[in-house]
Amino acid sequence: MGGGMDAPPAGSSCAGHNCITSADMGSTKIRHSRHSGGLTKITHSSYSGYFLLLKNPQEPYKCDGCKELGFGPCYKCEHEGCSFYLHEECANATPSAVHSYSECSLKFHFRAPQGNKRCCDACGQDVLGFVYQCKNKHPHTYHPSCLKLKRTLTAKDGTTLHLKEKLPSKCLYCGSKKTSNGIKGWSYVSSCRQYCYHVACVKDMILENWRNGYFLQDGNVNEVNNYRALESSIPNREVALPRGRSSSMTKQIWRKAKPVVMVIISALFGDPTGLILFVIDKLLSD
Image 1: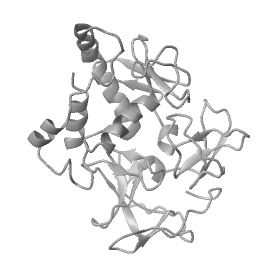
Image 2: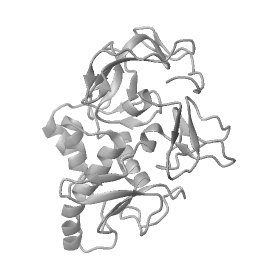
Image 3: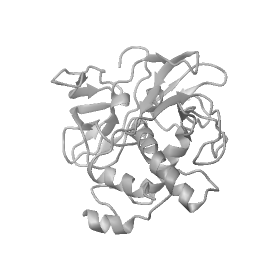
């Protein structure tokens, strides 16, 4: 990340390896090898002293850039005992960006410059770290990962979903056009208009279950690490179904909706693997 960005915050550290953030270090990225067009070994201006390696963790992680949950590929400190992570989107953030929904120039900041508490216009979650924001009186604000959400998704069953700034009909999860905190937010809507989900609702669903301990955290899943024990600890949840349906109708709709919800989860958090995928699949079981 080059000129035009604010200086990164200094002073945070990770125990055991004296890994610290620094406002003095440059933003040079070191080419080592490539993976699907991306660098696999970098340095970053928010983190000094060690390289960050492209990894695919088998457990959810909290990005030290935007402070949001993530699955799948990310950049991690080269020391195994260090838990510094960056989403790929956060590690590769550019000084400025544009998005058709905001129609203004967005500048990258290590922290939101506005004094008031800010929420992401896309997902409705609080902005606690890396952010893109414009200079308008009522600024548009986005997490780096939300700003990079794909405009079109295709589920395993072939259903095509389109990212929308406004929801044309009620969200199948919350039953409303607005999210619980009153923010309209972005949504994914299928071409057939049968499936409509707020980005915020799908994100809240995963975050709630993560906080409840149903995902790997620090290498453990509810203090057990085998599938059988994990399966018995997770409740079946009809988490993405239209309200007010009969049981038979609900199950019929769910069998079709499950791959749609799964592809949205992957777009928001990264592609889940291993036990993470198992947990999500179990949580989405009817």
